[in-house]
Length: 207
Ligand SMILES: [Cu+2]
Image 1 (tube, rainbow, N blue to C red):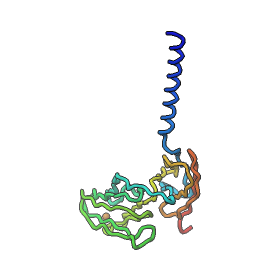
Image 2: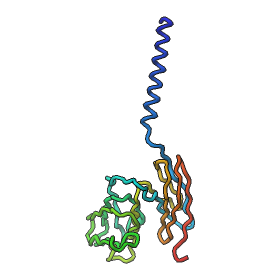
Image 3: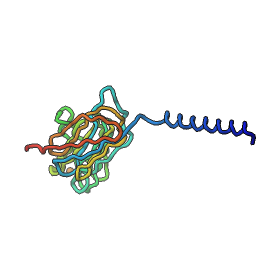
């Protein structure tokens, strides 16, 4: 191979590498990170989510999570879904269950009764309003569950120790809310730039 050939080969190789680098960078999504931290002051699972973002809406999620009624309990006891999600309520018990809620975040106009249905059957409801949905069953007053409907897809349920992680949150300024059964919710401004920490301390209601 002549010197001039070597020269052009090297030049083309470098050009190609530069092009690959440009394509790789331009195809990257918006910078995103995780919001993680700990919810303390309460025991057990908490829900942490990014509150509504001005001027931003999200398509209705395609997946339809199941809230099971099994052994006279709502399972899971606490669920979180994005606004616009259709939830399937399944009765797995050999007796009739009912599902109703008296309101969403205290708004009685959003109360609803799904009716009563037997084992093996499912009834669905699409939750278009964000808020806390306390689930009840007329037949079994001891049955309680909570569905948290969030305005954004950025939400998480903590582990039993309160540690949570919300993944793939685009960089930006947000209000992040922590919810726990029987506690006063808490919100704080969080500036997400890559991986960001946000801790919460909740106070149980009535204290
Ligand atoms: Cu029941």
